[in-house]
Length: 313
Image 1 (cartoon, rainbow, N blue to C red):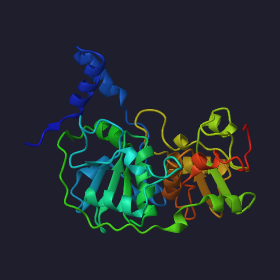
Image 2: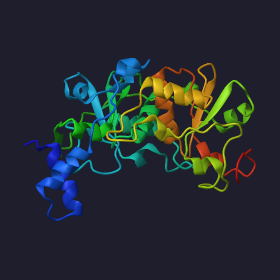
Image 3: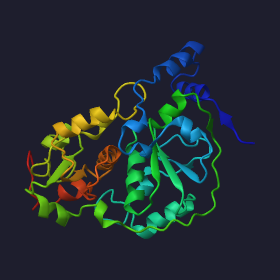
Image 4: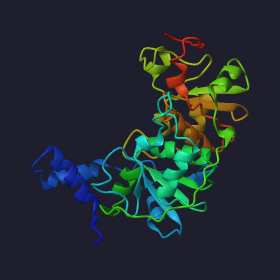
């Protein structure tokens, strides 16, 4: 029998992990702490169909595969019918550059295993900030899938809206998804070198300020690609309550202030193009149509002794 848990039970379980005897008041307080605050009508974004709400996802929308991309927690409760893809499955262990996506054949096999077909609508979600959901979103678009979306606010929004959760793992039929890499959606190291100083290109650094300035060094060298403006990926989502995406107006203002121009080629990057993929999604949501993340990101660039770098190194 399918085991359905209410969101309040999930919250109780979380409290039990920290307190062997949570009171009713503590459970209610935990529920109240997850406040709605700031969900925006998706129609205000140019590509608002890339975001879905909890109500939309709860409906029967045909061939939809819901993918839970959280690091942990799937077995304790997830959106009913959702399959699990762990973040580590979205990197190639054989690639010398950390975090690079699996090659076509590997990614194709993974998507087929979770039941993705050529015509499937894929909806990705994580804990709420859409970081890993965006990574899967980018991977699917990079490999040619035409209908992939993100649950706005992720699992936090799902619980906040009082939706049911399940502990049952589905057994999907193998899908027929075929991966075909779109070279127009990524930048190589050669592309980076060729476009440093090019006024028609913006390298968007989506890392923390410390990484950008070189104070926080996560490779052989710190700093940033010459000329790259800084806008941390997390600025795209609300910092209070449920981490919904900010309004189109707020996002437009943030990107404009950083010098991100629609008329230019935008190359987001971070350490391993996870945060860069989040910026990719935010830009796609706004309708930017020339966004080509640097997949190797700082894991590749910062470990090259010959790379041009600004900031501490």
